[in-house]
Image (cartoon, rainbow, N blue to C red; front, side, top):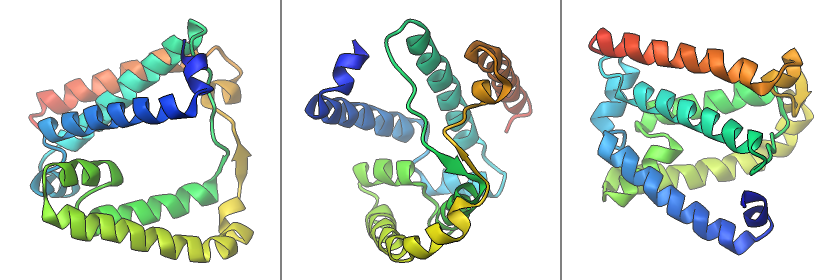
Length: 185
């Protein structure tokens, strides 16, 4: 079913657009497109964003591996490195801290009509993408390829069935969500 979709790029675009709209709607309904909620997260006052992200990781991880186990989908991990992770994390963190939105929540905030998301977020993303593209060749020669680990996943790293990783990580996430909720965060 999903393998057929993978071969049809135009259907992928429509399905992606529909799922993106649904995701943005859920982010907005969950409060993650609110500047105050995001800044509250960064200041450790409001853990709404962490709860949304952990829930998304949990559902996505179980869903992807269930589809994979049923033979309905394949994993296509992207190659990575410690250098890419460090640079990407720094860029993401600075943008998140300065603007108060991440790329997902800024799209949801634009959808709800937040002008700061349009001018600061979308314009900032375009300027940032342009700056990154201009320095990318130099970064690729240097830090981006430091400690390259390829397309390795945790189950491949440990040489185990993916569910050996998915089940305990899911338990940890559920435990963390329960702890956050019980702490009133």
